[in-house]
Image 1 (cartoon, rainbow, N blue to C red):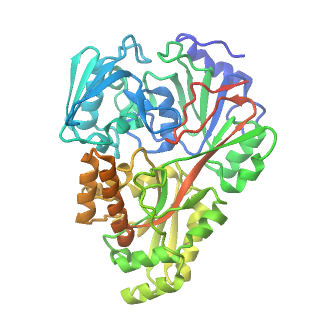
Image 2 (image 1 turned 90 degrees about the vertical axis):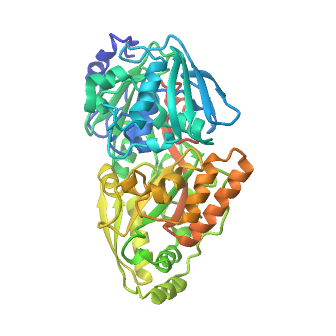
Image 3 (image 1 turned 90 degrees about the horizontal axis):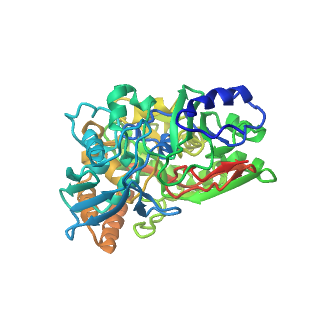
Length: 523
């Protein structure tokens, strides 16, 4: 066994581990007890929760940091975390939090109300000296905050500019994780590679394209972690990741490729599944090119055989998507009929639009958070579109490079791009990707430049509506309009999966799609 780690002894872990196992070598022998090795799908972009957008990164962050609240196990409902209690004003615009006492960040600095205020000012104040965290921060999540103030050392008050139904849920999302102000000020732009939070694990090391190592926080306020350390290995190629899992080089593998599922159906492995709020879709560039015509967008939706994609490419690990809200949000899900596979109707629409033989540039990623076997999916989609007369050219990119091309907008670059979102509230995906004010030049993720004033109004109304039935009505009306406008091709809703070896205990997947590893242990 590796030694039990203290803050002083944590630095010994890497040397001890590497002395017992050539971690960077493929297809190695079993990993040491007490150290979880997780096969990730990509290299992280950063370990600063205010700077990243990908679930791949969130899976690491949720073990280093805490938020004021968190999702209760097995749910998307908020429960206390760094805040032990809170009160909400009758009009829904003032949230007052009571913080836990005696908590320190990993760098030894104090967690208190001033630190909370500093975090939100960093995200929301463009004049803050540490505001510029990266090109695509999710500060949209907290745009309703008008003011945040420290009432005393352990009391914080948020005043919103209007009622905002997803506020607590967004605080539980990784963008709401609390970072150490002292560490940000020490490391500046390099904080994303030198993270410091209050979480169950302390950051130890990041070796690019090899591993991120975190070690047990012996002073964790909510109970010491069961494992001595966790090592996150980026293994982009799905076949290599599968081979490593079979050979014992990793203990937990996230996002098992559909074609590999049968290899883990037997002794020595446990396959875990969990439905969640996931949407896999194709962003269409409605600002220019063929998809500026709604008939061409609808033609693409009719051309693509979603049933075949879900059943054959994804081997039944997803269901057919019908719109921008996932069925996991049952109260808000419209349950619309999906576009049927109707190549003849697609050809008729292309003829009406004068777009027969239209050339399309299609961005595909090698892999990424929730991207569902993107290369085979992209190839199958290309074939379906070609069958009705589109001329499709695929350009394939590594995940972080892909995000760097898609998130700033498709204008002047591509006609369509794959994308997947895993969200915490029905508001999140449509509000950040379908509103006019969410175009990339305004800081949003509406990379296809869709705009419909009715959709804008419905989304604005839904997020301030405190009655859930009325909020659901607004979302369902929005989904009907978006289905008709077809700014995306709606493809799949994923049932997430992971596999562990039989040495791992207490592992479960969450509806949030995050990995919470505090209670997981390996014998």
